[in-house]
Length: 207
Image (cartoon, rainbow, N blue to C red; front, side, top):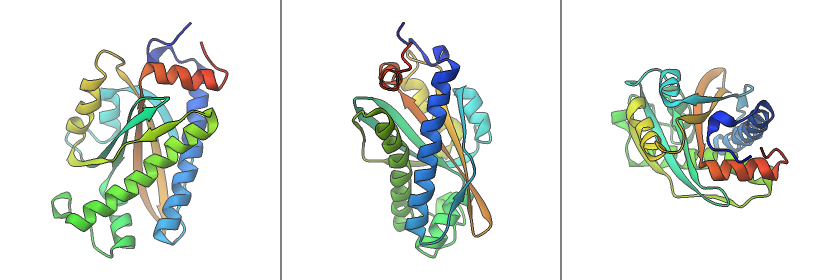
């Protein structure tokens, strides 16, 4: 039986998503270490399938200011992936790469935005590449679109787009450790249901 929505994922299929998340997070930590030219460690990521309101609360509530970087997914799997970062992550990146302090989201200049966007691109690609490597599917990501806004506003984009598809979203929570400072990031993975079915079929876990 084909998947109709995220609610129909069984425990084995959720475990497969967790494995994709684990590999993607490891790849992201390696890429980040290389980019920052210093060690970046990562805790075991938390992967959950939640509704949009629960994701917003996990991010700190609807009024929590975040940087959101949105990518379209194309190829054998279509959908969206969104990279969300808190101020601690932004500070870690900007301090290491351009030597600037992160005083607040309104203080981001063009170089800061470009730097954060490039890091988001690398992070998102780490997860997409992990998915493609495990499944053998061809999956590409679009040019990133970055916005600084409240969590509720950022999440409204995929919520509206996928209103007739699913009320659930795959949330990957990462905790990075850099020079003894913690920095959290979140990846929202939102493949369309047909793409999710292809992923499961390629892993031998089709419904």
